[in-house]
Amino acid sequence: MSNALRELEIWNDALTALQLLQIDPHGFGGVWLRAPFGPVRDQWLRQLASTKMNTIKLPGSVDLERLLGGIDLSLTLQTGQLHLQSGLLAQAHQGLVCISMAERFPASLMAPLTQAMDTQCLPPLRMSDSAQAAVQTTFGVLALDESVGDDLPISPALQERLGLWLNLQELPPSAVSDLAFALQNKDSDEGAVNAVLSAQSLAEMRPLLQRMQFNDEQATAICATAMGLGIDSLRVPSLALRVACVHAALHLRSEVVQADLAFATRAVLAPRATQWPTPPDNASDPTQPTPQEPEAASETQAQQPPPQDHAPPPTDSSEPPSSDESEQDSAEVNGPSPHDLKELLIAAALASLPADILERLMTKTGSNTGQSSGRSGTVRSGMQRGRPLPPRPGRPGGLARLHVLATLRAAAPKQRLRSGTQTARVAIRSEDFHVHRYQQNSATCLILALDASGSAALQRLAEAKGAVELLLQQSYARRDSVCIVAFRGAQAQLLLPMTRSLVRAKRAMTGLPGGGGTPLALALKMACEQAQQLHRQGVTPLLVVLSDGRANISLAGVGGREQAQADAVQWAAQWRLTGHRSMWIDTSVKPDAQVQNMASTMGGHYLPMPQVQAHRMASAMDHLRRL
Image 1 (cartoon, rainbow, N blue to C red):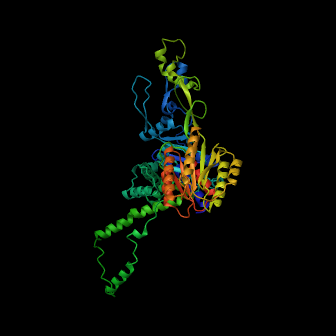
Image 2: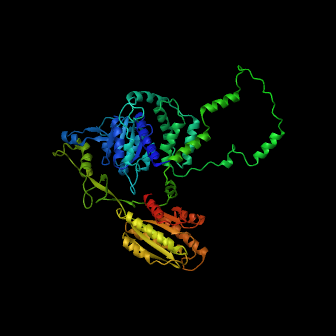
Image 3: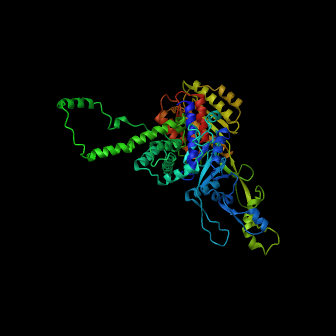
């Protein structure tokens, strides 16, 4: 598929998602829109505003009381009496909640948001003596994700609940301007794409959606496709079927057809793929003939009598067809079989997968024991700087600073009880004090264990040098660093301590000799020691091993492949206990099962790379930071 057709398909899917939101804003959860701030996203949001939908903007600085409802602080302080206000989620009933910079939305507010999406209600406000019922609200979520490069995406809990995933990051503004649609009626120009549905069209589509149903074969095909793509969530197939129903109502159909399932697969299932689907095995297909079948068929034909010259007498047209013929005709009318439908949906998903999906799937996040560390480092709470977190009760002093608004909110409901004990306008006690909190991310250091042994060491060193230079150029803004451990002969040496200096890295790798044995256990031991030192300094370590895994030098520095391999496995398991991420880049001619087991023992990722390339290795290391 050419770039122009690919861009056209992406933009058409974005417009279709806008139409589906108008029909059913909350049925399939909402839309995850990944696009930077620019003309592409602005044009899509401009058309959303033209739909006149009830859209409530949710800033990242919102607090819990403003989200769910609570005290109207300004009116309470002005009148001296308790006044409540409805939350933003209650105001978004039958509409949309638009979250700007959703990747930075506080985790403390993500739980009540997703709970409201699941239960379709808000907890009652218990600020007064009278009992209040839960507030009913149904809304969809539009998550505007501006994350690029090393930025974290939105919360996984919100990702799972949003049906449509749109990625407009690689869509150039020129393509959107060429395909820009005018806000006009469909009658004025049949060729123009009108994403804004009229009230009359919505009145026709929504009753169709209420009566829309899918059959068991379609549900089975969607579930099988989700399993083939490695999607383990039970919520995702339900969202895909709901999107298919809304898509059918958009085209004024009374039942779900293959085109609706193909769109749901492309927009819901394909972006969530975590594995490459297994191709169908033609050898096990009963419909495919075996090599012995043609001979048997020829013998059977030879034994059969020759065909008769005269045709059989015509049957009476009034005779009803047999039950077998009726079932065959009904099967042809109903459409493809579940097996064929599954293959069609998998083909639709494969056509929409990005080109670099194999690289990303080979370095996908795996199970890891202990704490999780990644590109942003370990998350720590502090009182001085970082990303603001919701305040907590506490006494100000030292490094803790008083949060004035949270303190006033805590004191406002108790003013009636304190009115007789204090003449001040607002009575504040020590139990009302709240303090600021901030979230800090530690820096990341990539430990590169470089195999300098063997005849191919010179080429590996040259490509590894180029990869380190690329990483240091990219990590300058993140303030990340690199540490290199080289091993050859009977020893492993710290070639480059933790540094961000590109000049120092070039100088250290220039005079490194190659050849000799492979003391893999010594290298893993030194990597664990460096990781402990970095962790004590508040730096999150990541380990990348560049080797073919053929250890032949033990920890004692003597030869012996069996003992050397056992020592390497022992220190690989020791790295797994640290809980930090790791990756093994296998430089063997063919993928080696022994190296795969070693990477699994480390709790890391495995990436075969027979021909070491600087750009590919730097891309794999940078992707490890993003996990």
